Every structure is written in C-alpha cells, then in structure tokens.
Image (cartoon, rainbow, N blue to C red; front, side, top):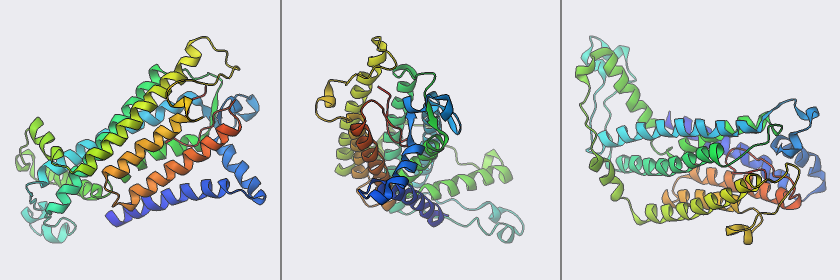
Amino acid sequence: MEIGLVGMLRAAWMAGIMPIVIASLPYSRLGLFHGVVLEFAKRGKIKQSSSHYKFTVPQRFFSHFYVVAVIWTTFLLLTMWIYASLVSEPYFYSNVSSHLPGGSNIFPFLKLHFISTERSCDSWLSMFLLLLMEVQVLRRLLETIYVFNYNPSARMHIFGYLAGLFFYVAAPLSLSSACVADAFIFSANEVTRFIFKGKGSMRATEFDWWDFVNPLMKLGWCQWFGAAIFFFGWIHQLRCHAILGSLRKHGRRNDEYVIPCGDWFDIVSSPHYLAEIVIYAGMVFASEGADLTIWLLFAFVVANLVFAAAETHRNPAVIFFINCSSSLVEA
C-alpha cells in the first residue's frame, strides 16, 4: 500500500510540474500550449465576462480549498498522533484473526506488526510537518473569511478549482508519506479489532499534554530551523495578505488597480508568492530533505508560483490563479 500511495503522489506531482515547466519555456512554438495552460489557470477579472461562465465557478469557492485542507489535515494529524503515541514504546499489536477460529485463513492481511524505532521517529516527524501544515491552512481559511472580499462576478476555471481541491488533499499526504500508509493500516486494524472483539479489547489511552509534547521536543535542529524558516515566510505572507485585503476595504473601485506598498511589496512584485515558497522550503528543511515526495511537492509549488509571478509581472492589472497552493488575491 505504501509503495502504491507514494508512487501515485510522486506521479501526480510530476504530472502537475511538467505542463507548467513546458508552458514556461521561451519557444514561440509553445505559444498555443502556454495559452491553454494559462486559460485553465485564469481567475478574477478576466473571468467576469458572461461569455466565460462556461466551465467556471465563483471565485469565492476559493474558501473550499481551506475548509477541505483544515478537515483533512486535522484528520491526518489525529491519526498520526494516535499512531505515533502507541508505537513509540514500541508497541506490538496482534491481529484480530488470532482470536477467531480459522481467523488466520480468513484474515491473512492482518499480521503481527512491529514498529521499529526508526519508524516511530518517522511518525513524530510526520506529525510535526502536519502541525506546520495545520498552522498554514487554518490561517488561510481565516483570511478567506475575514480578509479577502471577492468580487461576486469574479470567476475561476473549474480545472483550477479541482486542482485546488486535489492539492490540499495530496499535500498533507505527501508531508506524512513516510509512514501515513502504516498509520492507516494501524487504524484499520484497530477498527477491525473493535468490530470483532468489542471495546474491551482496545488499548486504553489517556490524553496527556506532556506525552504529546515531549517527543516533539526531542526532534533535531533541522526540524526547528525548518520551523523558523516556515514562520519567517508565514509572518510575511500574513502581512502581505493584510495589505492586499485592505485595498478594497479602503474604497477602491473594482476596476481600479493599485500597486500595493509595504513589507516585501517594496522588494518584489509578488511577495505573497515568495512567502509561500519560503513556507514550503521550511517544510522541506524540517523533513531533512530525505523524502523525494516532499521535494516534488516543493518543486510543484515553486513551478506554479514562478509561473504565476511571471504572468502577474507582465500584466499587473490582473492576478492569475495557478492552483490551490498559491495564495493569490485579486488586488
């Protein structure tokens, strides 16, 4: 299962990276392909015309990405915490079939499972990365509710909408890919145990904040330095989004473009993209750079945002949407 899940995630990121990279190549023969990719990516003012309502959804659906992200990341975080807590001793859990007549033949997929010390460390590292992701998506959800005021007529392509939903399902899975499959198998075995043996067969667990925090405190310097990079980008993205969100609140007309000022806007033209790249770079550093799946996730974010920044710089009157990972806001 793990090989299959990891392989599918890597293939999906490669499938997302390649069209963006090809569309970004400076060859005139690729102009048509560039236009197709850009058409799928457009959102905001360029989608307001009624002639473009086919295959589009309201731009306010942008908030759906973060609702899905918060629910899914929270679920993975809780699953990983239970798994990491129980296996860190390490913990042996036997299969249900051993308690049933002929069970070894009926349930051959439930086998005695031993979690090594290395796998236990992977589970706590995965949980640490999911905690960072949770901090990011919670803030983005609050921003879509309280900071951004989307134009009711603004649209985005349905392809971009579906890509956004996919991203926020695949990204947390990628951050925990080192042992998420084992965590799912563990959970499935425990559910099966409960079904066939009842509550009495379940291992009693009590929530203890110290038991939750102590293993995280034992993580290495890479994790904490990566977290510092993450929050450096996180804080600047928060500030940049506040600047963008304030433009309309101060009475700007929908058709008036104003160049934002302040924070990283004084340095680069798309600082919220740069901050997003810094955020995911922090996650890569925190993972110690040993997982190819996380590297591909990061490569997708970079390719996506660099393409978006280039289009925005060429046409600053319109902000383009290039999937859910970007934090694009119509100015």
